[in-house]
Image (cartoon, rainbow, N blue to C red; front, side, top):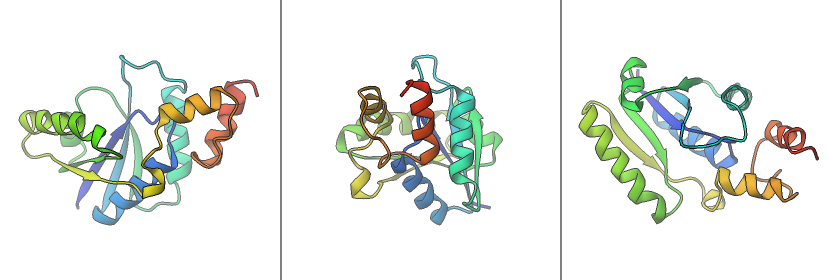
Amino acid sequence: MRRAIYPGSFDPVTNGHLDVIERARKLFDEVVVAVAHNDQKQPLFTLAERLDFLGQVTASLAGVKVAPLDGLLVEFAVQQNAHAVVRGLRAVSDFEFEFQMALMNRKLEATVETIFLMPKEEYTYLSSRIVKEIARLGGDVGKFVPPCVVESFARKLQR
């Protein structure tokens, strides 16, 4: 079985993330969406909420499972018997960081390859950070995130 890990904080999951998940699913038998806990970030949504969002929006996608990620990505990949990590690239500015991470992951675990996927053009400007800023300022994020996230924004931001 060809299995890949698609890691991220997904705070929150966006339509761009979903596009990359669907693209990865065409290349692999199974895609594990790994929701990371990152001490250096202050997420708006809890890990449980982010796992729930992803569970809801990927429920109808065969071969996609959602799991929490704590620790080294390559160790998680080996535990999951995955041989690839999928990373989304929106712009050239993403590439430098992602390239460094891919090289480090290769040093740590040579059996795990990194695959870069570009989302559809309409999602290249989209990031969780931008979506959160729009929501905080009272803008409509319905075109950028799944409905379950829109509803959660409304509750979390008291709108």
